[in-house]
Length: 347
Image 1 (cartoon, rainbow, N blue to C red):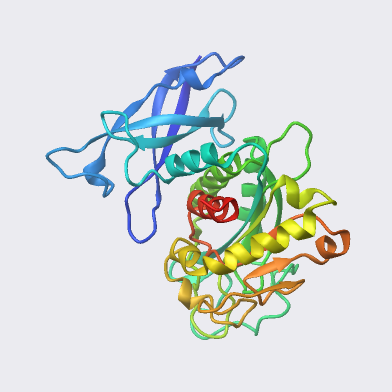
Image 2: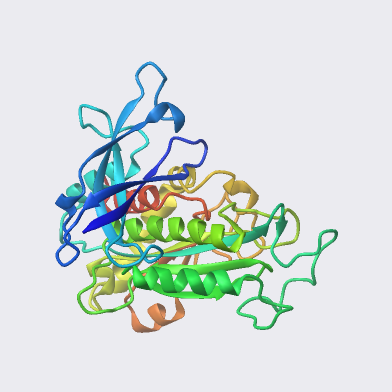
């Protein structure tokens, strides 16, 4: 069967990488597709801020594929790493670094990850649902709200959720956020038998879910942005809260002791984490609007104004996971996961 296969990769845009994609027609056995069915492919790196014009050939190496929920049965989305022509990782290939970190970490940690991806919908230059001039009603009724005067863009949100499920991505849930026109979806551990919430898989799924959000936005004539502070002033920013745990954190015998040690390690490397947690993060981490100040580190039980939140249920149970509330919505999950693993494993 001839299939439309959409190759997806990360470009060299600064300070925040964006997604690129192009389509190749391949003959694929739709009854038994395999990663080996998708060959390497080249592209012009000089047009993606990844090379100069007189030496611009780069390589797309497929690393994960899923069903294409938009084009339908027999078509695929193919996530790729960017390589040089000698097949070494390009400097913009943050996935390669996460692979290296995982190889060092050892299987005894058995990391589980989950990302809470906040984003803001825009109609042109105006947040969706906002008046062309002035501001909507103050924040309050919009979080998990319902009704045409409180929820804006639900059609796109629901289309995106179904597309993620049809593609086999680990979508956990969705909700309207505090600022009108702002939403969230979660990707990661959800307790489904046979699924693995390892950081590489979950990060791949998040990038594919981001691509689907942008692509479906084309059909709805709505733009989604991951800006950490999309509207200045007294409005919530957008984050990518990161939930993570290790096997010792999930063990009732060692849970809280391991969690406390991890928090201390995170405290000692706060500056290093902030450096890779997304551009313009200082605009969001102000100490207001459910954030901690970018200049301080804090941790607390059920405290959404802290850098690290220990969920109430984890505190009572004595084991579980932590939530890192510092990453911005535009953070690269590969970099966030790699930094957390390095810090907790004391590299």
